[in-house]
Image 1 (cartoon, rainbow, N blue to C red):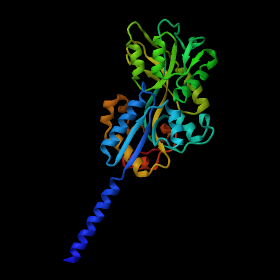
Image 2: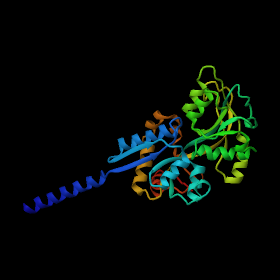
Image 3: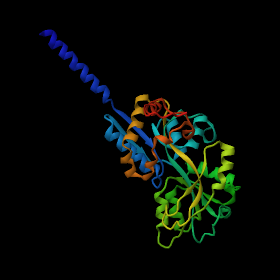
Image 4: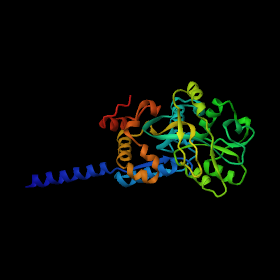
Length: 320
């Protein structure tokens, strides 16, 4: 009898220990983007599903300038998880461009959705084609944003530089405010469809939104920076008052983590995002693009985290 009691007691201790391990507290800081973009609401949605559905997980999303800032925060161990454009992540991983001071220890968790470059203006500015930006007041994106990085590459490929116009460095929300106040003529923004701040500008009474074609930049960008970009289209009526298709340059967004994130944590994050995708679609429709068919080493640009690779292997996805 004593042996049975002792055995039962020992089993209870083991069970309690197992529960404690299973519900070990995991705190995750998610770097997103400006509040007027798509990264911010989607990052908040990811934080919510991780906190709600994974026992012991507490995730919070922080607004940032965007991809470059997110990689810098990750390098400083101030963020564990982030959204980033593939081109910025590649530069961070390789330690080049904005990251020439040293490579960022970063890995891909998943390919998320396509990021389309917007060159936004309104009627009355005299801007009808890309070359018309010359001499105008133009924002190339917030400092340390992926918009700023990609805008420079688009401009270069299209034969312009930042000295060809009066340059501002604003996030999309502040750019829209400046256009409304007639202090700005156009702005660059790379993001999902729709971006709330662009929608706001298009819906403003007395304003006629115009999106400037620039897909001719893609060949030159890929020749210099590698096969990161594709020709794409922002469909008509994606924004209020947008009647014509807009020919643009597009790059994939990816969800990234520090390389030293525990494999099980990375696995749990990816598994939860895919299993609770419907929750995220309610936050922003770009989550509809969270799809196994988009997962590949080429689209991610940087190596996948082993925990993420394990999840995709279980689903029969060949990343290479």
